[in-house]
Amino acid sequence: MLFARVKTGEYGMQSEIVNSTTGEVTHKKSENEADVMPFGFSICVPAGQCDNGIIVLQTIGNYGIKVALNRKLDSMVKQLDPDLRFEMGVVVPRLVLNRFFEHGVLKALRFIQYEIPADESERLGLNHNTNEASKEVIIRKPVGFLQNNARKLNEWRNGEIIYSDVVQIEGFDYDELKMDFKLGKTSKTISLKNIDNLQMTEDVTDEVTLEGGHPTFDTLKNVMRDTGKDYLIEKGLIVE
Image (cartoon, rainbow, N blue to C red):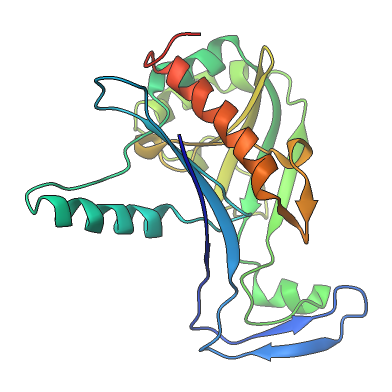
């Protein structure tokens, strides 16, 4: 297992940095400045002869490093052999998805809107020109959802409809639908946004020690180690 942490951020848009307590503007970020945050990742490969592995990536809200890391690793692979390419494939096989749908307990549905309309932002007193705010509608203990929407969920799994056609909320256009599952001792969140590239995330806030709002690297490594091991076992690459 390889553990690493990098700092990265995006620039190109002006925004205001405000004090969350007073609401006063403390700094105006220019288009040449970037919000730089630390992101941890782990590369987990079974010992011995193996051509498969797992990469565990930390995300913060809607931010992550998958694209940047994929690009960097692909560049390194090409330096070793110009005929080779590196690409992060689908981590969650549909077999794992079916296991959660058939044997897991659906704990919550989370409908997320990443861009709040300007009129609503103004009504709520939010800053303009910022993509940090998001709106989320959470339905906890959605008893009967999987059974009553089985036909639409099957159509989604077969690629016949997109995630937003599974269920609609009047007056709320969401950008992503996530489902929180519990299976035994395992809790996982599955995003329905792209059936061909399923993303599974886990909320590990309670399992790490936070400093300045970010997990310490040592506690993050412990979580990534356990997570990587679990996925290697699920894929049949190692045995307990």
